[in-house]
Amino acid sequence: MQTDNRPLSPHLQIYRLPLTAITSILHRISGAALVLGTLVLTYWLVAAAGGPESYATAQAVLGNFLVQLLMFAWTYAVFYHMCNGIRHLFWDAGHGFDLTTARNTGLVAFAAAGVLTVLAWIIVFSA
Amino acid sequence: MAFRSPIKEARGLGAAHHGVGHWWAQRVTAIALVPLLLWFVVGVAAHSSADYAQAVAWIGSPVNAVLMILSVAVAFYHGSLGVQVILEDYVDSEGLLVTLDVLQKFVAVVFAAAGIFAVLKIAFGG
Image 1 (cartoon, each protein chain N blue to C red):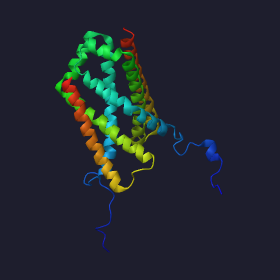
Image 2 (image 1 turned 60 degrees about the horizontal axis):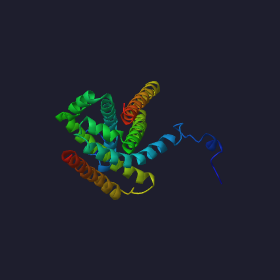
Image 3 (image 1 turned 90 degrees about the vertical axis):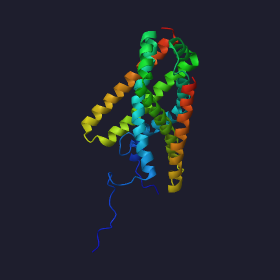
Image 4 (image 1 turned 180 degrees about the vertical axis):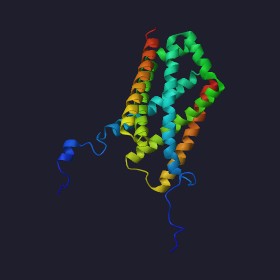
């Protein structure tokens, strides 16, 4: 009896996730990252409310190169989560479930998030 | 013929015991966040190198203050709903799950309140 080509359950370390699975887990990861981002937003608002000195400290902290890299990642996370979230809303309404459409809308979410991130940082650097 | 008994209507909460309330709130806040986020990212990007006076003037103007308060409130609500789902998926122990979920809700409410108070303080010239 041949048993070596039975389907196996996905072993996450060697199984290549399909694109729809990658978009799904990235939705969760970006969402969790954005929750941490909202804490930083609160810090920025409270610092601004605290007066010129605390605001200057916050601008110095947030202007740090590593924090700026984090901000860039957060910008992509926010737009990815938004674009992929819109994809989820269409699914909730019963549209876009067939494999080709689900794959294509996933690619569109990645691309649209990239374009929106670049646009946002063009605004940052021209401000 | 209806095979479902009336008790389904009476309870209406399904296997998770909380019906569609969480699911629906997550969707409604998601929709609200789309325009709020676009306003927020453009506004913060445009004021990323603002000095104190410019930043306070931007946050404190009536329209921006209202949009910022809404952004903070809706973002923390939506985020808290999401963290709840993540905890429900990965935390096996019921006691630990309830503890962590209550804790994350407290943190969300405290940070949201602090953020909203900060905007009000700026807007009313504190």
